[in-house]
Structures are given as structure tokens and as C-alpha cells.
Image 1 (tube, rainbow, N blue to C red):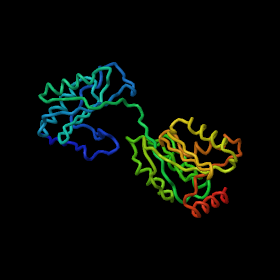
Image 2: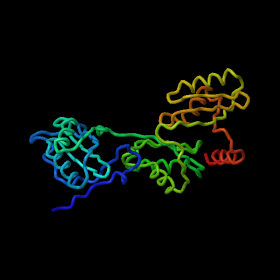
Image 3: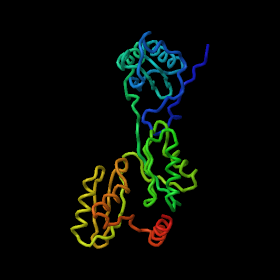
Image 4: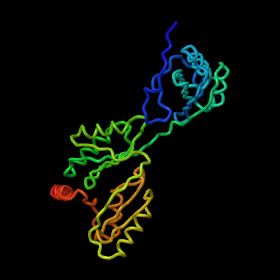
Length: 287
């Protein structure tokens, strides 16, 4: 009798709240759909069930085999250690309730706890990149990121020393993104991921009136993802709080400079003093 190998959810990625049972299941499925029918890849769904009452590998095997006897099941994997079952199926031929009832018919209590379609998932992270001094540097990093499977969009801004990356968290982790950037020869530091709220200080040169600062403030507040804007008219400084998965510093700089029709220049506020000023000189020199 073949030994049943069970999967442990503890080995799965932390990015998903219900895991990714990536290995193939151990029991062959029945035909995925009736003969003569074709199913588009976009019609596939995934569901996670809690399964209570399992105490051994034989229990898990019974549940897995019962699910796979259903028409329309693409894959089913049962985890006895965490009392969960993941099922990938075609909703044209079977639904979550039928799968749940099938599990209960075997003798275990089942409850649907998560479901998703096979639509592309997306997450945004922002990474600080140290060591770039010219556009060739930022282009090198951006090109390297865009070649990685799972990257949906990547933008690297030399002026702010930041990369904004949209990626599929089911394929990549932000740690892998950090490693990819460092492989190009630059230091990478994670700033934020997902829905994290970020804050940035900007210095605006060329503004001579409070009215101009108020116009800039209103323009920034109108941007999607901006949650708050505070201004310091004396220092010509702006503090912007925002959702990093929606918008970023590059957008703020573009809006500020377009508001003044080229008369205003926005930069990251030089809290680091001489080091930041020296960096700006390096960038200007290399342009």
C-alpha cells in the first residue's frame, strides 16, 4: 500500500493567509469535465476548507479520494496537520457546497474558509536603493526587475532612490525582490508593502507666496492615495502621508513641478544634511 504523504501548511509562504499547496496531489482525479467539453483557464477556482475530525493519514486520504471522484475537480490536497483541504475546480461542473457535502459524507465536518478565482493577484512594494548616481544605474535596476517572472510593473526613480514594484505575491516575495536588486550591485532596503501607509517630506524651491503653497497642497490632496498633506511655509516644506500601493514620491514631484509650470522644483527634504546635498550634486553631475 502506497504511503500517503501529507503537506504541512507551515512550509507554505507567509504572504498568503491560506497557503499555496503547490505540489501535485497524490490521488488521481476523475475526468476534470465531461468528454467533449472544453474549459477556459479563466473559469478555474480555488477553495480552502477546514476539515475537522481527521486524526491520521488514512483520514486525509479518504477525504482527498472522495473529492477527486467529483466531476470538475482539477486538484485536491488535504493537510491533516492543519485540518485543511485545498481544492482547485471548474465551477461549471461543481461548486463549493457540493465539495463540502462530499467531505461530510466521508464522516468529517467541513467548512469553506476561503475562495478565489484564478485572476492575477497583485501587490505593490517600495524599495529604497542606495548607490545609484546616474540614469544608467536606475535603468540597469529597472531592466533587471522587469525580466523577473511575476513582476507586473517596475519603476525606478533616481531622484528619490526608490523602486516601486507591482508583482504577484503568489510567485514572488519582497525578499526575492530585494535580492534581485542587490544582485545588480546596489543596496536595497524595503520601505513598504501592500496597504502600508507611508510618509515623505518634500522641499519646494521657487515658491514665493503662501498662495502658491496652498495651490500645491490642494493639488496633492486631490491625488488618489494621498491621505494627508501638511505644509511649512517658512521652510517651504511639505509632509505627505499616502498609500504606497496607490501612489508614490515620483507622482508628487511631477504634480508640484507641473503646478508651477516649471517654476517650482521639488526634492526629498534633505534631513540628512550634507550627505543628501552631496548626493544631489552627484546626480546633477551624472545627468
